[in-house]
Length: 101
View 1 (cartoon, helix red, strand yellow):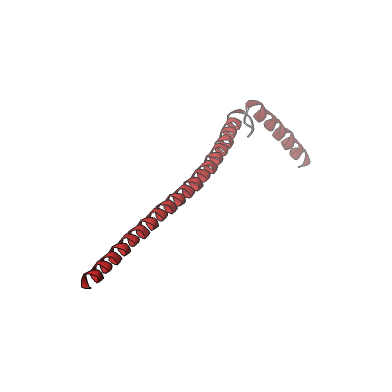
View 2 (cartoon, helix red, strand yellow):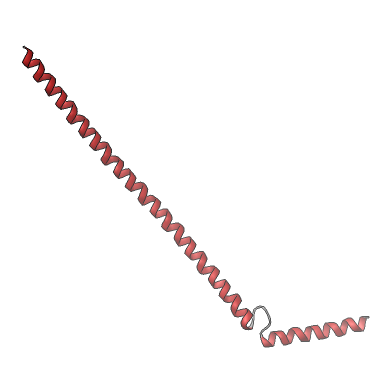
């Protein structure tokens, strides 16, 4: 049994050596190239995701700023319109009072 285990170990190590020589090791040959491509693709994907997150954050800030500007313009419009209506009403009341006396 022990001699069979030694023979198996010797043959197994020889097989591993041959696999490395012909590129069947996970880091060599076509398999190694595919692993490198997969790692590079993962890195590129991570960079793109980070860029998209930054772009989305910047767009959100831009949209919030645009909403704030629109809100300020609307408030100023409403205040101006309210002021004009108030002045018109006051002038009408003054003209009405002057007409009665």
